[in-house]
Length: 253
Ligand code: FPP
Image (cartoon, rainbow, N blue to C red; front, side, top):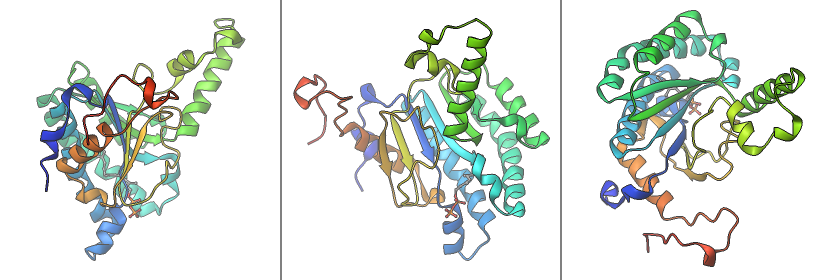
């Protein structure tokens, strides 16, 4: 296996990586275990991805931990996921502090169970001064929810006379999204072979490179993240321009 980490150009890292962590259920089935076992093992992959991204110097890592649609899963699985979140956030905060990672959440966390909300708030407060990387957990999040809540708040500001309709620009809209202050996603990874965005960061992935891997989430390692970044760096990102207009040369054959 190539040493992917060695092949990474540290000067051209994606500033913001987002991951749709998929395949926990299938991984559990493969091992003849209940779905929850897959989620439990997914936590190791979360830890590895966060560590690998921070070690490299990625600024933002956003993980799709619980979507607004995930509430439709069997109650037993939803409860187990919530329990796992509380437990993991609690047990991992010291590691986040050690690695100088700031925890943040996107999504409507006011609708999360109280213990989950409280645990999250404590971890967010404790890690607030860390500046190496921001780990964003998308919880009760969906891309359409984010765009809708931004639209609603903009409408309110216009109604209150704080803003004029002409002031609503692409950049201004960004300020109202839950990812305010963060750069656009540059690399979106989805595990488990599915090739969909599934209502994740719809606005923010406008120019993202999409990377799909057949690996199931609990199998995703640091090396897999390194490989995804090398793949990203081999792509030609044109942003609507022609190849000839680009000055930045690709470092891959
Ligand atoms: C998708 O796999 C995974 C989820 C909906 C939950 C992700 C949660 C974790 C990795 C555990 C905790 C996370 C944190 C951040 C502490 P799936 O259940 O849809 O898999 P399947 O498609 O194979 O059924």
